[in-house]
Length: 383
Image (cartoon, rainbow, N blue to C red; front, side, top):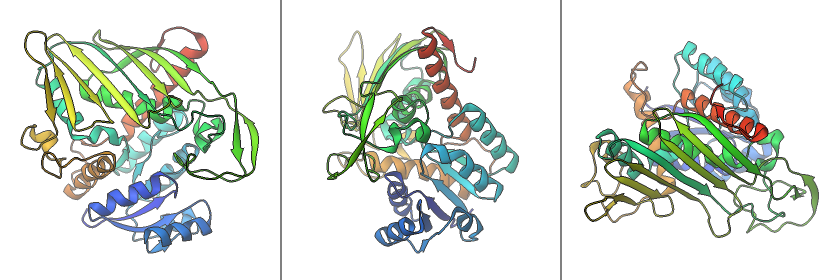
């Protein structure tokens, strides 16, 4: 497909991020839909988007729209993705793909039946050095993988006065920190290593069992800069942090720490993968360096430089070494993989972007983690 038109659904944190990433690729953003006609109009004016849709029906009826980007709260994903596919639109959805594995399984089946291209925005995969880490593992440079550990930590929900729709189970699901950011980590390490998590043992904790909700919505990560006047006390069921033990198929073990209440950590994803020959480690707050560890020779730091990495990583690097690329670039590169695939036109070819199948696997992981916490035992994924 050449020159596809895109509609953005959702005007919060992710809507503008998707818009920027698409425009940097030269992809036409046709229109945007907010939770009300007024929010649609304001977002269209602010972002310079031609159309402000009044309803989702308008989006699906627009012949200029070939792809729908879904960036709404989690509870809308299943209905909006289903309707878009049934309307003949390709879909790129924010994670998590759905609220339950029954919903995500239905979306996988629908995508397969329609033959349309359907992806999930696990953009962290597309830091170039994460793509290079995958190639290092595939070449056998690490040897047999023994262990995988790390975490994803933030501080934007540290205080009981911090609030966003994500803290509400009805809006985002019973899991919050794990589903919102922990799934990024799990998707990433499984993609890099090629290993699948087969069982989990989880412990979740809600520190702030009540929070102060403003009498008006708060955008993601904006609580520190917005001045809030009136609030109301609400009960919170979703977790602020989580510890998860992981058992991978093939015998490797791992551990994941997820927190949205770690002071000073703004958006820090870290992993360390240890093998029989070497180890690698990466930190999203220093994304242009990959640590490579050895037993019998000096360790190395591989910098993000197209002249120093494999072709698999090089195709997702836009600037020379020393010209650092970061978080916003991962959206562009994830979308590049998606839209290059659309342009090639062979929808039977392997898909180089996160698919609905990947999104479904993450929902199964989340359900196993929640069940493990509730029952305080090891739980098999999908079991």
